[in-house]
Length: 119
Image (cartoon, rainbow, N blue to C red; front, side, top):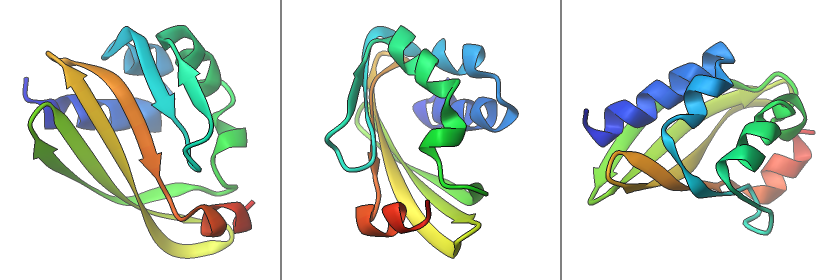
């Protein structure tokens, strides 16, 4: 399976709320860097636990309206078009770095001032 398909499968699992399936594509010692780049989760279990509180992490009414993947060597960047209750349209990007066919790093890039304003 190519890396873009793995990332797409993860977005689909996220949308379906199937977090247990989502985390199977991550190495045990993965890291997740959240918007603002200051908060880092280390380990697949910490990441999985954070997904249970996804409603607190994402803006109210968050919805992905478009998604495309850009593939590099051992990495994928997702360009995510989104909207929320307080934002009619915006974009963010997410970098996924791979070891083989598993993700070892996920890093979100957002306009942090805009992101804060939608909560």
